[in-house]
Length: 388
Image (cartoon, rainbow, N blue to C red):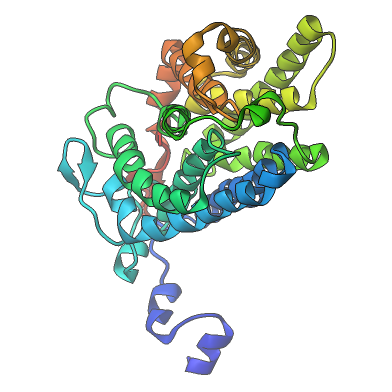
């Protein structure tokens, strides 16, 4: 085959042989789904959170807030492939972290992924999308007063020092992995972003008093649009966690939307019961808490449990945000702009505890490891379906 023909087919001459003889472990369906899922998670941040943040704040902070999300996404990608991915999912340096290293060589990216039946490039991309949305989620606690220059420095520092440690300990080769069930990020993503955002908000300090008293969204329609991106993008968030286009993926996706819809209805109902009116902002918060709560167990619990988790996701974070936050002096001292602590830390940890207590979780976890990649001879290879 000539170089011109290779170029017409989008191939490089050096990779012709590799593409003509696809390795047995590269399942085309799983490969296609994993790339699709990773892209959907990326769309949750850009444009999802870019639109959501830009519309939920006052007009004078709209551009800064949207730009924080956009910058965070780009910055995390560069840091991720240069050193952070291997810190989170590479060889162990010591019990908290992996060995830093670049994930850029063809030999590494085209090798068999440590999870699933696709190239390592898919895994790097998918885990980057998770890391990026985690950083951008915690930014929600700082909107309305964060200096952009400080944010530029904060993103790579927090990713390196905090996110990689949590990911390695729970999902990588760390010491917590055997003690916790975290299907798609209830602890690694949502608890960490909620606690980190709350802590950062404490140290950065509050907004001006006039902004704290009145901080209406500048565009409610765009806010709903951004929340919609976040909701539908979660199909890839939880659907991509099994690393295979299988039955658990289907269950995880359905459970995600059941829990989210239930949580939205409960949150809106609570607003009507207590305040005698519904709220679009409340509906958006209900969407987020439902998505977050189901994340630790989306593919590990049955759909009845997803309904129960949706009810609790609409009740518990609503109570902590709308009632408890106003009663406790310590919570009042911390200006968490979008209530990320309540919507992510509270909902995520609650979802994790509910998953841990569910008998269905252990059953699904055990059965999921039996679905494997098969070689042409029918012999099992690496597990295709496992907890993230």
